[in-house]
Length: 317
Image 1 (tube, rainbow, N blue to C red):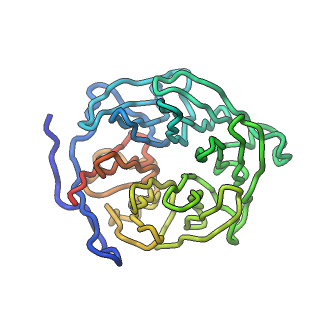
Image 2: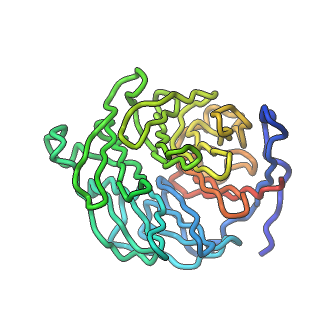
């Protein structure tokens, strides 16, 4: 099936340094056939092999699509019910996935084929938890040296750092609204645009992003017209922000607003998990939960939706 390209999705403004990038919505993407994504309450990454990995709350918790939207494979039933955050790590000549699992209260490292290399339980050593059930990790990032950073966004709102051998190092953040504190530290991403690299953390219910160094020291707030940011994906100078309240936001390297994409005009459809397919409109998001760039600058967006929604935006310029 040849996908339909709908009109430009760009809905706001130009970057201070020049014209905004432009996209078109690719209709009828992906091609699922008889399969169902199930509840899309997870994350996405693009791999060197040219595939999009999408985790969901279905009996097939990982879907792998090629650029045309065809299902390459799925895995793995034993991880069903709770996969959430996900990041890709290049280690030697191989790629690995680091995943947070809400139901298991742990982080996992897997191969691209779904083989579990190790699991990392809740940080009892931190002294912050009375039981594993309080730990509900929503995001994970890997530092340049292999250090692991876990965002406990649905739990106690701490960021936990582990060394490359998975030994506990420190916790930072904690609940609150002042700079350096969190109200749902949902997603965490390594930003290699800075020297040295830094961490960008989506502080969802405080309506902002926060930047920290790799030792957990607060650097700055990024508050560029964000509603409820869930996660970010970075390519070149652009940072795409999945905003649960109905749109995707693009920011430049200075954290300035470049554009809003697909802003849903109906507030009643934003940040809802139960909008039926009959009410989906091309060019309008519902509840963006994850974003991912591919190598050509195309953008993929996952809506938090019980019926399963992943969209592709083709980059025009």
